Image (cartoon, rainbow, N blue to C red):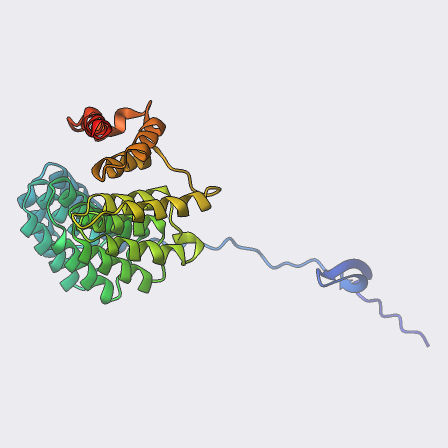
Length: 332
């Protein structure tokens, strides 16, 4: 006897792909049942009123603080920071950045450095713009960056990571003021952080070594570059610094040393070409040591770009300073 019970639902077969790893079509039995479950839209969680108020309050304080910093009002910046603390907000790295910059713009380097030390003492990580502002300010005043280096290196050894721009700027400014020791220490710290010194950094160090009166130091750096990796190979500027070191040394005749450097440059001619400064240094070298023919040849190569003899337009030295010794040499 057949049952007269009739199901209240029907079976259908719907083909579909299982997933992207098994793209096979398979029949799946589905129930054509109308669901009465209501789909409700999830309500957005209301923003925490306290957090919103704190963000708004902090923004208001920061806006006032930065206005004082731009106006070189260090007292106003300090007062805003005290108001923040009174309101239950802790000043962050950008607040201290405004304080440091305001002192730097006022020329109060000691207060600027004390503010940076205070920030580090509070366990905060200074933003890299703070270091950049300090280094640039010290460099613009022609002052040594020893304090900036000391605080920076203390932070670096404590785990603070600097940007490439901060490392480069510190090395450049140290070398500008002849602070070879600090520039070298920053370079070591940069390499310890995982960024190797390149031709650019070695040339900065050479700019100091070339004026110390001991050309062997510059040549040692040159050799390290020559036998190092591709990213630290000597370029034209490198050769120029070493030639200058030999030329302006107060020791014995250095013509042979300069000639050997020129030979190395010629061998590497596919990668390196002498520039106007190279020829100007050669004229200076050969004139100094009374090598007439070579001096005249170097002068002929540099002729037509004589602006280099004016210290790039910043001095009063004229080409006559080189021509007069040459004329005297030809008659003796």
